[in-house]
Length: 194
Image (cartoon, rainbow, N blue to C red):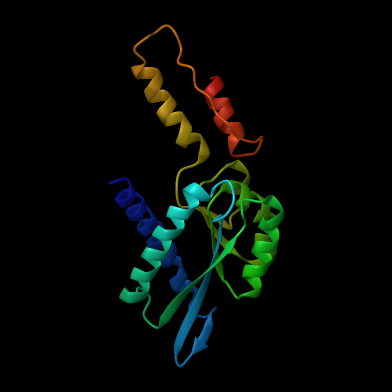
């Protein structure tokens, strides 16, 4: 059931991604009257986020295959081009630049750290990015769209539920978190302390 929910969420994300692609019909490569719209995907298949991103990538590829078969944009063909960052911040910008050289006209990013790193180039390159998770840095850019939850809601909502249903009140539950000091983890730490 878990995998089914992930697939449905991924399908919804890709459907949301496909809607604005209609406006890109003049931006792709054209062959025999069919425009190819290239979508870049900055992912992690070999780094620390790969246990979560591997299944995410499979779901996206399944949804992509379904979209190719159902032809959601008449007169256009979608092509997904992935770049494995290995969740190495030193590969975020080279990955972005490489995807641009492949002719992508829109990108999908899996983590706010990736989007935060490339956000400085988006206005210059007129590149739209759909980010699976959004934080304050990326939210400030008109070139970034959120296809999931903002970081604060991912943790504030379950923490609120836990606080409302904790059976051993007035004691507090002990909750731990492991992460880096980034724009993704800082709101989590802040939520936990409150």
